[in-house]
Image (cartoon, rainbow, N blue to C red; front, side, top):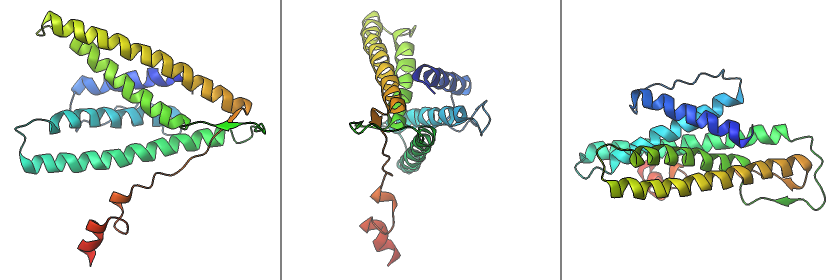
Length: 201
């Protein structure tokens, strides 16, 4: 799974979500669950729903109880996203398991899946910045400013996709190696979060 193919899947997911543009709409994932493309699509679908949840919770007039529900939903979404990233890294660990690692091999600052996570979010930024740059009810100054930001985002996409593919190539050649650290989110764990632990006592 190279970056161009993954980005295309992210774009498909974003476009599918906006057919209904509703945070509770069911995923339209077209890929079989046995296909790694299914995970990439689903990962972006979760990101896309969360993007819109983040919009909703910033409404200054939102009901406090509704805001709390949205905040907890965002927390849960973040955990789901993390789990999906770890699943994608598991795929890459398995895929590259037979690679002979060079004695001089180095580790990267992030794993492939976390780079794909950044690419997924970048796809969302580009989609929504394009919307803003072409909004019929926006001022010309707003559209010009958004167009400039869009150009920067597209440059970031080019840089990130090149770097991501270079990383995969280096791992495939044994010049870099993967290590995956499970995310240890302490605030979700009743045995580690003192507030949650106190409620059980």
